[in-house]
Length: 320
Image 1: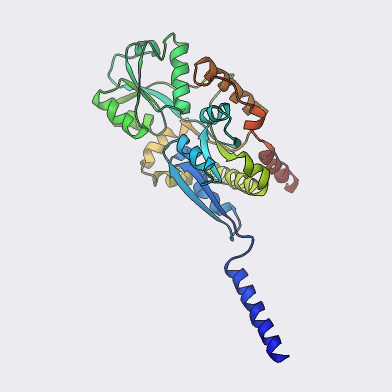
Image 2: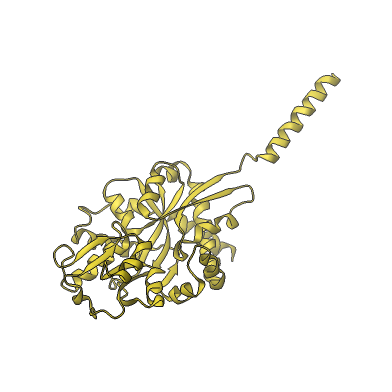
């Protein structure tokens, strides 16, 4: 009897110890994003999940690679431009935007002392861009609105974001459309000049990027998605309330703090989505189809799921 009691006690103690070392409710979240000031929030998620949970952040250089990792189930959530999300959904891929990520952040840059004074002057010029990004859509739209054909009147050249400044300064391109901080950096270094901030009119506005999950994650593990959306919202609010800390942290990615401070008016981090956000995304999709970037419109009700954002807002309101 004593031996049985001792054996039971030892087994119970080992079980309790195992739970303490590796709690059954512990979760690991894998999130993808860019190392930029406007996409920084995932690096703060760890501060807004339970102590038992772990957030691992993977950095990428473009939205397509993040989306590929997401669909391969290597990530639970990732950042994406809304243009890329619309393009993916139009091809039937099971992706869902569950929160906003950032707005604004883009600029069209030309050589400081060059002859280009207005968008129409880009006729016959070489323009650097990254395919599949919001910047491509903004560039195509800007050219089209000013009477220029992206296919016939200019030469659009694929140039990595990190190489655009050197390409412009060296004369291998005449302009580029990119996200911050590269436009501000070009101005600060003395070789670039902002020709335009290419945001759409009232129909689309300055929407830019969002946070993406797989549809099966929403169906099979909605609490995981909610926890990530909640961490994203808290991180965004905290950074907006402490802009100095936001930019200082972002400077650790390699961009000098003074450059980020100059770029800050053209950057906006976000998390909230509402019906107006969806309407602007739909207007963006219509422009993408008109520009030939997509062949058909996606199912926007399937692409955007506001239930997690709305749940957070309801819970926040009930606690006040």
